[in-house]
Amino acid sequence: MSIYLISNRRLNGNLGGFITEGSLFHVEYEQGLNEFLRDYHELDWTDTRYPDTLEAVGISTAEQMAEAIPIADMEVLKALLTRMVREERFAAGALAQYARNGMVADVLCRLKESDTLR
Image (cartoon, rainbow, N blue to C red; front, side, top):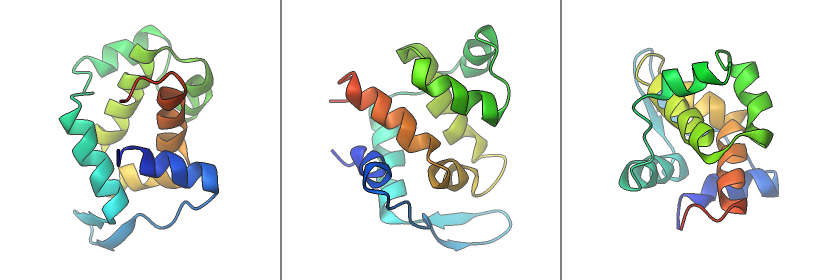
């Protein structure tokens, strides 16, 4: 499944650029990130209450998000992914930054470890 592409890049040390073209308000992502977004939406992994979910466990910053990944349960991992995807609506390239710093891959690896994404 293509949703594993980003987690495999992380495991193989190949994080790449993720953005093929961009402007102030819009970015074009490379195929792997676009496939991740397609799979994310097809699997319906959106947590519509992600702000509440994250607030309940004390997560409000990117640093806190990164620290939570190794110990997060599935509900929090889903909220973390949702926040990463949703931030793109407010800041072009935000998802690429999360992918570049490994947070998207780290969440996907945790999900893969638990065999949640089939």
